[in-house]
Image 1 (tube, helix red, strand yellow):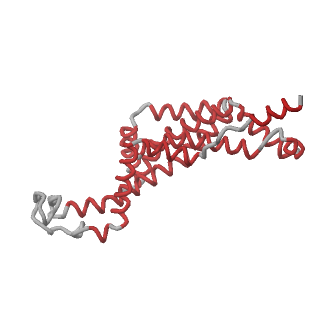
Image 2 (image 1 turned 90 degrees about the horizontal axis):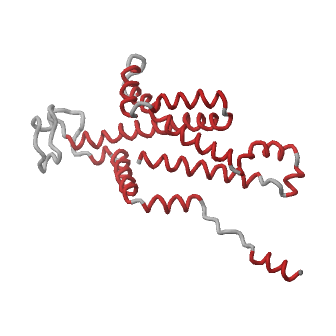
Image 3 (image 1 turned 90 degrees about the vertical axis):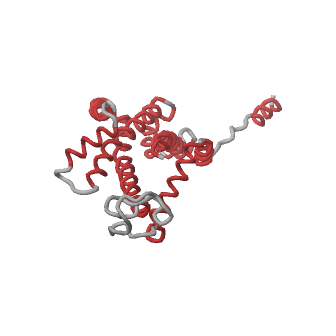
Length: 238
């Protein structure tokens, strides 16, 4: 009897766990299109950081060449209507493009993710109000919505901040819906009792000592689910 029990224990090994970062890295680099996009993004970052060293001409000073020149050895991408070098202006333009992209994505992330978590966790009227507002924004194509918001906001903001705010608002529904779906799936799974068990574990140390609820393991599972969902959504913007 003892030998049988011992053999059962010997063969009941836990499955091999793969770290979330290793899994993300494997899936990420298996997608050739995503890898190509990452290379282009890195080239844009390098061009934006070292723009003063890379540009052959001052991108803002006109008269560097004749108007609307064709590409040549002197001007690799030609010149614009005012005689400014197109390549120099393109390299400096990478700074503006990256600033708009990163600020818009991070702003929508820090607004959309909390909204999705709140809607999925509390449910009821809160879930209905938040998600119906996200659905209303998603009724329009993202770029069309951004153009409409930019036209409305131009009287209240100036310059490039109109574009940043418009894009941020247009991207928020994507992050909110992804996080909302992840939150609902966690609530309906075994980890769905996480919040209530967190409170009971904080009040009673006996449960934790008995091994009934592992706070660290549940937190890791919660963060793992959320990272996978947001990671899949984030790849769309590369």
